Amino acid sequence: LAGQYPQRRKPLLWRVPHQQPVGADDNTVYIGRQTQENANANEVRRTIVEVINHESYDDSTNDNDIALLKMASTVTFTNYIRPVCLAAPGSTFHAGTDSWVTGWGRIVSLPSPQNLMEVEVPVVGNRKCKCDYAGVFLINDNMICAGLEAGGKDSWRLWGPMVNKQNSRWIQSGVVSFGRGCARPNNPGVYARVSRYQSWINSKITENQPGFITFTSSGTDSDLSASCSLVTIMQYVLVIIAQEDTVKNTAPECVLTFV
Image (tube, rainbow, N blue to C red; front, side, top):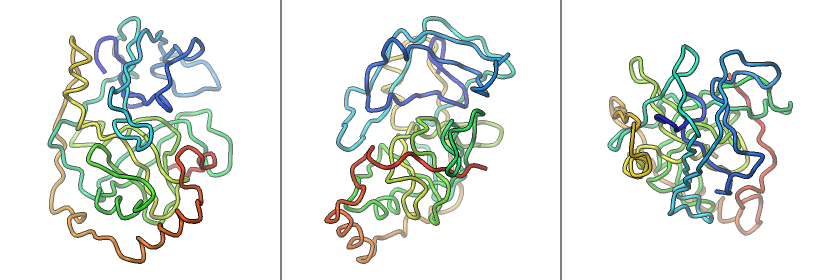
């Protein structure tokens, strides 16, 4: 994020899967990496010296699913390594707002790509997202959802950032958190909402704090008129009774379609 904290359009605020401590084999970050097949001339490597998990992370709901990684030394910005702004409190992301998520997830049924990939998905308002996951997951204001109603694109298990563009600036709005399966219709990806964590981030990074910018959507948010139908609620009640793939982290490996 700033100084000794990782920053760039790809992993900026990293989620530590299941909030596990980083082990001896997982104590390195690579910044500026574009491929995992060959050497990356513009890549830098840093050792992680501290993992800062959110103290109020809830494993049962994935609330406050966010963490910071502190590196042993600073990183110099280049044409290939740039900081990203973080969404400030009060940011508004209306339903349909274009968002981009980067990572190394699988493409369709193929193995994970060796090149960094990007998927574009629209924001799904929290009211609609609550309807989509009624009886399955609890969606709260610390979360932001994104995905296509028809499915087909997703970012599940990428553990990467979601960013949005405002004029010429990229602003990070989310961190991949969880979902039900992958790329299913009416099952958007759920992300930790970065704009809810400025105070927490600044309390952990006391020097060279990151820049926060308010992202503002124009027009009226269509999510304000979203409501759950009885059919939707009953559908998920039946899913719970059938115990069909509703427990997080038990879904098959993500199948993605990138653009």
